[in-house]
Structures are given as C-alpha cells and as structure tokens.
Length: 394
Ligand SMILES: *[C@@H]1O[C@H](CO)[C@@H](O)[C@H](O)[C@H]1NC(C)=O
Ligand SMILES: *[C@@H]1O[C@H](CO)[C@@H](O)[C@H](O)[C@H]1NC(C)=O
Ligand SMILES: *[C@@H]1O[C@H](CO)[C@@H](O)[C@H](O)[C@H]1NC(C)=O
Ligand SMILES: *[C@@H]1O[C@H](CO)[C@@H](O)[C@H](O)[C@H]1NC(C)=O
Ligand SMILES: *[C@@H]1O[C@H](CO)[C@@H](O)[C@H](O)[C@H]1NC(C)=O
Ligand SMILES: *[C@@H]1O[C@H](CO)[C@@H](O)[C@H](O)[C@H]1NC(C)=O
Ligand SMILES: *[C@@H]1O[C@H](CO)[C@@H](O)[C@H](O)[C@H]1NC(C)=O
Ligand SMILES: *[C@@H]1O[C@H](CO)[C@@H](O)[C@H](O)[C@H]1NC(C)=O
Image (cartoon, rainbow, N blue to C red; front, side):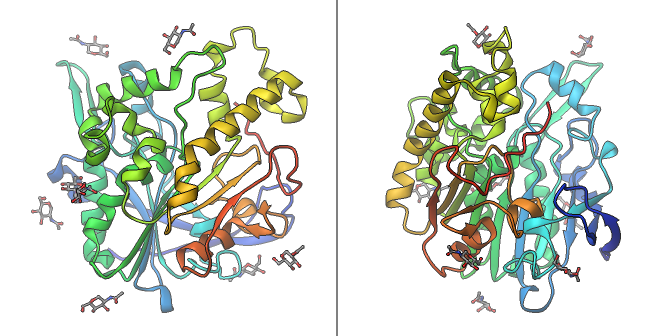
C-alpha cells in the first residue's frame, strides 16, 4: 500500500510560535499480518505505525521512533488502558503530526529530515517487551509488546529497512525505555555493514527510592514484569550477570551490556521521574509537594536539595558511560521537561534549550554522524537560562 502524506496549514499551538506554518500529518498503517504472528494490542486490535518515506540522499536511511505513554502493571490498569488510545489502535488518531526529529523540513531537522521516518504506535503497556496473555473465560488481555515489535519490523523490512545504510532506533519516555530494551535486537535485523545506532529520549528511568524511602518504582516494575511476561525479553547478558535479573529493566544496569552505539537524552530533573519515581502521590499524602511539582520556582530549599540529590544520583548512574563509552553520546540538561526530541520547540528552534550553546538537534546529529564527541552535562538548576521549564498539568 502506498503511504501518502498530507500537509495541512494550521496554527501551531506553542506559545512562542505565532506564525501559521504547514505541519506534516502522516497516516496510520495497520499491520494486517500481525494476527498471524500473535501480535495484538491490549484489546486484541491490530498494531500500527506511521511511515513517512525518505527521499534524496536519505532514501536508504531509517529512523524508527517508539511512541511513549507510561505502563500498566496490573489487571485493573490494563483493562482500563485497553479501552483507550494507549491500549488499542481503535481509539488512536489515524494521523500523527511529525515534528522535531520526525520533521521533513531541512531547516527544522537538518540531519534526519529526508530519512524514512517511522512512528511505532504504543498499545501494549510494557514498552514493547511483554509476552503473555490474560484469559479467564470472559475477558482477554493481550500482553504482546515483543511480538508487536517483531511484527512491525517484519512489515518494514521488505519496504526497504532490510537494505538500510543508516538507521537510528529512538523513542521517548516508555518508548525511550523500549529503545534501550530493543537496541541490540534492532541491529540484528539490519545489514552487517549498516551504521546502526540508538537513542533514548527521557527513557533513563532511575532505580531510585522515593521521598518516603520506598522503592516504589522497583515495586511497580516488578509487577509489570510479572504481569506482562517481560523477563525473557530483557537483555540476556544483563539478566545472566545480575543477582536480581529484573533490575535489567532499569537502563542504568542494562546499559553496559548494549553493544550498539547509544545516545542518552534526558533531563536531570525529568518531570515524569520527579512526579512518579521521586515524589509519587503515595509518598506525599499531604500534598506538600504539589506547588513545587507544578513550578520549580515554588520549591522550598529542602525540596530543591532533594531534587539536586536526584540529579546527582542520575549523573552517578551515568558516570561509567560518560567516562568509558567511546561511541556513546549524551545530553543531560537541567530543564524541567519530559521528552525533548519530538517537539520542535525543544528539538531545534531559535530559543530551544542548549548546553554549551549546542541544541539537542545539533548534539544528536554530531554524535550520529561522528562529527564530534558529544557528551554534554548541564550545570545544576537554576543556572540554565535556555530552559522553558514547561510542566504539563497532571
Ligand atoms: C505473514 O506472516 C506469516 C507468518 O509469520 C508469514 O509466513 C507470511 O509470509 C507473512 N505475509 C506477509 C505478506 O508478510
Ligand atoms: C521549513 O521551516 C522554515 C522555518 O520554520 C519555514 O520558514 C519554511 O516555510 C518551512 N518549509 C516548508 C517547506 O515547510
Ligand atoms: C475475568 O476478569 C475480569 C476482569 O478482572 C472480571 O471482571 C471477570 O469477572 C472475570 N471473570 C471470571 C469468570 O472470573
Ligand atoms: C553493504 O553491502 C551491500 C552489498 O555488498 C552494498 O550493496 C551496500 O551498499 C553496503 N552498504 C553500505 C552502507 O556500505
Ligand atoms: C530479536 O527479537 C526477536 C523476538 O522479537 C527474536 O525472535 C530474535 O531472536 C531476537 N534476535 C536477537 C539477535 O536477539
Ligand atoms: C511502598 O510502595 C509499595 C508499592 O507501591 C506500597 O504498597 C507501600 O504501601 C508503600 N509504602 C509506603 C510506606 O509508602
Ligand atoms: C552476550 O555476550 C556474548 C559473549 O560476549 C555475545 O556473544 C552475545 O552476542 C551477547 N548477546 C547480546 C544480545 O548482546
Ligand atoms: C551560539 O551558537 C550560535 C549558532 O547556533 C552562534 O550564532 C552564537 O554565536 C553562539 N554563541 C556563542 C556564545 O558561542
């Protein structure tokens, strides 16, 4: 099937873009053959992706981007998700806006604009890594993320992916975690002589205690792994090395086993991690953090020092990679943000965030094309005046 792209002129909604600019909307492709491979969204619907074909010098290069959107770790939350766009292609938008790293405009995305660019829709609830099924006779849930990954790859290989010259596997949030999980597996499908690299945006979820000293993220991941059958799809060399193999779902433990060159883009004050790992609602029953969560300027000195501690722990977890990884890259800035590669205003714009005067688009392009070594670490909050500190409302 030929995939057409539509460009429509609409007003961009970001506050600092006042001009009306064309935006690229790419139609959904359902993976019709997925049912033969047992690959279904939570509710049993077919998985999907959006492909915008490459052109010119980029026609043989491929960028695959995992969509994000949290996880579901128990039956209740998965049944709930199965009836939404997070768990079923039936409820998803049939067109996706491609911007930032997915943009087709050379001035907005100079290094990847003419590549084949694919957004993999997220509908399994376990970062494309589960393999199980719940069926009690009356209700069914499919936990088939790993099979969805495989079915999408199988669909793309004959469309040119199997002959790729350059490839980049990317993703944001739960999709950024998927990028860690599937990076080496991605490489195995591509030609030996292709240049294959991986990027995680806001996917470096830390194994960190919350403010009540509870390992609530570990507990959450434990439930996710056992409900969705994730363990067998974690990096085998990590699980065979660690005393607690389930920890391999945390990128900080899996990282040293990933052989493909990797770039880590993350904020040291990632808003999702702040709100869900460091200060989950269960650890702040009295809501003492509510104002600080919405506006870093409203944090008291004690809260700020806890946030600085979180940044320090993230940098410690990255230290080995920072020091020893020769082909790796990183951009750890200090903006209150979550996902910075998919929206134009954080990826590359006149006032987009910078570290050492370098935008995220430049840093990632420099690393991908080996123009220069790119390992940027920002100074601690509030020093960075290029941040937008846009905190989404809960
Ligand atoms: C569909 O999947 C089956 C089973 O994996 C495979 O044998 C067949 O070649 C696939 N067909 C297409 C058109 O991809
Ligand atoms: C590409 O982006 C630039 C800068 O925003 C804009 O001026 C130009 O019109 C865009 N080009 C196309 C073909 O959309
Ligand atoms: C099957 O599971 C669903 C969801 O947990 C529940 O509502 C339903 O009652 C269960 N059916 C049986 C037969 O246990
Ligand atoms: C890889 O090798 C194949 C077959 O020799 C060749 O056609 C292709 O251009 C090569 N790709 C790269 C990136 O060198
Ligand atoms: C990649 O993952 C698929 C399952 O999705 C598996 O069949 C295959 O063996 C994996 N390849 C490698 C090299 O691990
Ligand atoms: C710690 O986290 C677990 C799992 O989320 C939860 O069941 C437990 O109530 C929490 N304990 C405290 C003291 O917050
Ligand atoms: C695991 O390590 C072995 C030995 O170093 C290596 O041959 C194998 O490719 C590794 N597996 C993966 C998935 O990287
Ligand atoms: C920062 O980079 C821009 C180009 O992106 C350049 O015009 C400017 O001079 C640089 N500023 C400094 C202080 O290096």
